Image 1 (cartoon, rainbow, N blue to C red):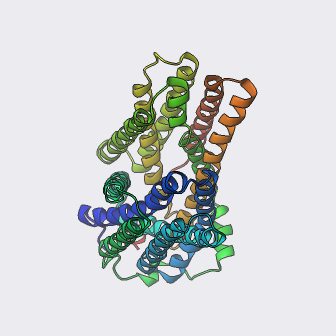
Image 2: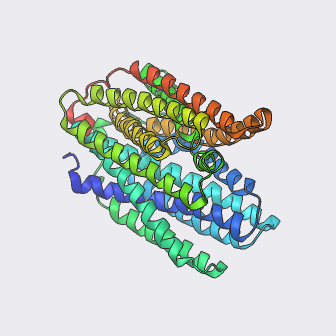
Image 3: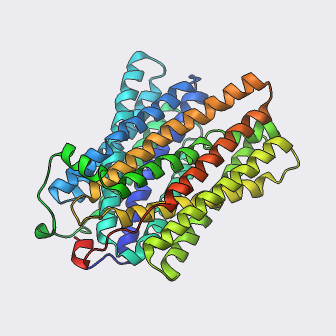
Length: 428
């Protein structure tokens, strides 16, 4: 089967953008509406977001389902349908206020969001891994994630404008529009792109437990799972504390801290673009190149966090924006290189287990994101209470994050090359 060209890879990037658009609706827009417009405690949306990450621990099961059936497309479309439905129900529950019925519906909605992201996202990456030529995988990972970020930014901007002035009816209309358009875009992106399965290239289906034990027994798969958890834990820990840090230590206004977050995302995009171009264009084997990018990105992230720790100690006068840009750039480098490595390593030992491997790594990432956000916020709160000062509390947390990134770099340095496959196997 002919590998995907750039138009096909871009179509899969549209699916990733559609997933990101609905997730943004649930984890960002509704978060703000619950806290600001409905004056609910911030712990409610935070708990719901953490719950949707917990549900994503089911990702290996969704990946194994498509491995067993030899088709990814139905799982992607079905997952998008559940995700879109969950997004609409989450908005409906938000308009019900703080009642018990609203809480029950919210729990159902965020469970659907977690399941939908798990099914669609895991199998999208598995499809990308099986249909992309090895030399194009770094650039494919970069392109799909850049498209996801662009989709999130565009959706956030348009949805924000349509919600002003806010009414519950407008919220439901916007949520329904975002979910419907995202589902349609995903269906168009994936339609006809998978091709017919090559049955003789796949091993017989095995029970989920046996398949999971089998891939966990592979030392590279196991080591990479640990790397994903540690690296994403470090990545997620600063996600919820960067803007409070800018406000408490540097005295930035809400608008200024939001602009600072934009600077960070600009750095992320530049880092992703660099890996896409460098990983595709520079000499050497793809797996070795990606390992160098991963290690370099993790070490650079640790250095940027060490600089943020110094900024917490120095306070106003430190060049905060360049430091945050550098952190975003380093994060973008390691994150996309890691995704490219996932695409490379998914087909170890031949085709047939790409979905469950992607699911295992997705579950590790989801667990890290859920724990990282909680750890970062609670550690800062505990540090401020114990030390009686803002700067030292943030300084300690940033140092811990930097150490986590160094541990992740050491783990990544131990990764070996993926086993070579025949062209037929690599594209099955």
